[in-house]
Amino acid sequence: MGEEVGFPTQGELIRFAFRFSGVLPEKQDASLARGVTRDNVRRAIDRLAMDDGKLEENFERLLRMLGEMVGEHVEWPPVHQALGDVLGSVLEDYQSLLANEGTFLTRRETVQWLIRDRWTSLVATTLAKSAAQWHPSVFLPMRPAGDTWFLPDFDGTGVVWPMRKSLDWLYETAGVSRTQFHYPGRDAEESDSQRRRDLENAENWASGRSLPSAPALRHSLQQALTGRPEGLAGLNDPSKLQCVQAVLFLARGSTAIWQTIVAKHGTDFASQVRALFLRQWRLLMTEMAKVERQIAREARAHGVAPDHPDLRSDVFQGWAEETRYRSDRAQQELQTHIASTGRFPADSVLQQLAVDHGELALEFLTHSHRLGRLHECPPHFAEAFGEWDRLRQVDSHTFEDVDAFAARLREQGLAEILCWMPPWLRFIRAYRAGDHEQAWSSIGQAYESARYRAGRPQYEIVNQFVEMAAKRGDAAAFRRGVHWARYIGLQIRWIRDAPLTRKNLQFAMEFLGRASYGV
Image (cartoon, rainbow, N blue to C red; front, side):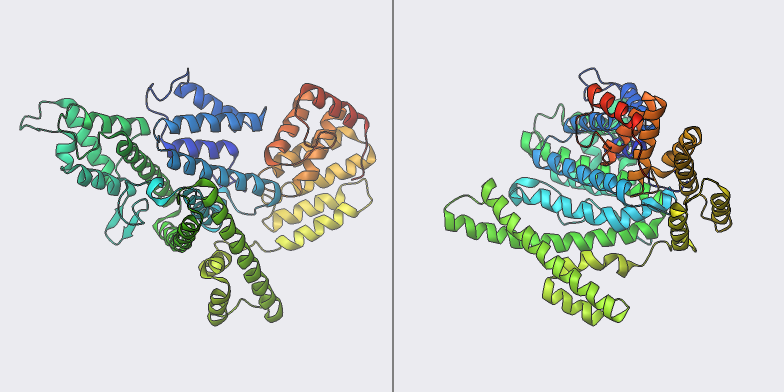
């Protein structure tokens, strides 16, 4: 990503999802059934990246396609569901941020903030909640020992990636060495060139020098199990094999994600994020153990099995409500302390809050402060918002003060960050003056500049863009604005939550083409 200010685009996000899952093979593969090819998937991603057309529909179609392709490699239902839950929660948060939270950071810096201060906690929480729907003996019963097998290990000598851990576990589970797993009966001449390539690939994957696609990883496992009449420690059992495939898929995806974090943001940042995730994950697992004990007690009391879905749902819901209550109370006390003292609580106060409301609640409230700010707010940023708001109220049809404001933003280094402000102010002046040509030109600039930067002000900007498109009879621009609004959860006048049918769009366009609103 470049240094442009803003959130990553939806096209970038969906590309990340496909890349990290590894489901697109280097060539046509059985996992790309039903007429799907690498090229038509990539064309669909490119269309989405253009931010044109039916964004919500196109995005959902790609997500369904991704889910189906992941399902070819993760057949163990609890894990497949958990992956969907995690991706869904991240995308929901992303769309909410686009609509409600602006950013003054570059895309690279914004991604750093998203990873550490938003999505690490979100992924840990969502994964824990998804796993809690299943009895622990069912979620992923066959997996490496410990709670860090899906995380990298950083030390002074290098990195041990999750891919290495999962492959070593696989060989240990099978009871053979890496060589005998991928090249059984290896001879001195290495006469089997395919087996030799399989072994070389596995060595590269374990070292982190390269990563396989998900189809290549699955094919390697199938090749290793083919032609072994004695089997490998029961790996030919379908349920065990599904668990192994899920472990390898998770480890491959985790390795891809962490390698990208290291490459883009450095080992120190990656180590900090890993420590944060592990701290929160262990707190969550402690809570989940309490929930399991409560489920066991309730199961005995009611004479049902502890994996009964209604029982598990009821107990977990009770825990979630109690946790939410404790978190709200902790947040109130934290805010009261800050308001009365003008500073963040000392460690002794935080320790007492943890005793009163639970360590989990306090961790999720305070981890960003504990780790420190990643980036400082730019100088004059708050003042610029105040000046912009004042200029909005000025009853004038001229642009001199707006041009002067734009010049100050340039001088203060805020022109890129707040690039949507001057054209929006020009739109307001032109709209009030009845100059629809100038108004259209200005609102178009504001709309394009605001989408991945401005946050909440987009509600007005997008509605005004759609209105001006209607007044000009520009149906393509009208649909583009409406679909963007629907994608990030904004409502458009005269459409609101109605289906985006041709009839509904035509009605709204005709009405907005005649209507006038105060700006």
